[in-house]
Length: 295
Ligand SMILES: O=C(O)CCC(=O)C(=O)O
Ligand SMILES: [Fe+2]
Image (cartoon, rainbow, N blue to C red):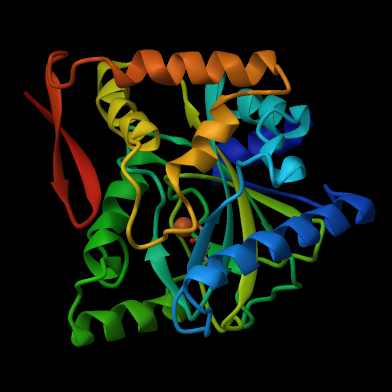
């Protein structure tokens, strides 16, 4: 449960830091399961610090992680932020290199919250998450979208060397708030908030627990239908063979019988079957993101 001030902070600035959220005992479990799944991933492709490993933590072989979405410390906080939400993903990441300015939402109309926690201490020049406070608000989001070095055009994989250089420079030049963090802390941020990181090690351990809003407006439906269809897609992803869809199906089996988890699963299945482009809106794809347009 967040305090009123924490909720206000999140809504105003688009993020809130929850200090010493996890106990030392929980941090031990987290590190053990992280280590275990890292080894599984490395058995497919050695981790050498040149490329990020993104690792799904939703299977029954990582019991602590896989129960985090329905942990009320997260789920109730997410509801305080957005009202009704859908818990949908739990990840561990081994990040490499700097991260240019970007937002995580598939589109502005698909908000939600990422609860991120770093397993190592991170500061301004050692990979701490930096955010542009308030950039989740529509007017400023749109203004920053067109800013040189910030946003999807500059962060997509196929960018030119020159564009990469501009995006890299922008990390330190754009005014930002740095979310210093120590193990046990959680940084919660709106998926629409612009964020980046600078100077971290080539093996930054970051984990995340992720929620979407339960869609309400026609625009939100267009985005969330696509997001959810992606999660339920059973085709395996050749780029990360250590995340077969069976990990997700394992979570969906809900063997612990969590009512909350079941509600989210049922709702995701319901949404995934909905038709797109029939509510007066549709989406266009570009630079790895969606844009909601009138249809
Ligand atoms: O830690 C980083 O370098 C980037 C983190 C990030 O972009 C995220 O968690 O969404
Ligand atoms: Fe991100």
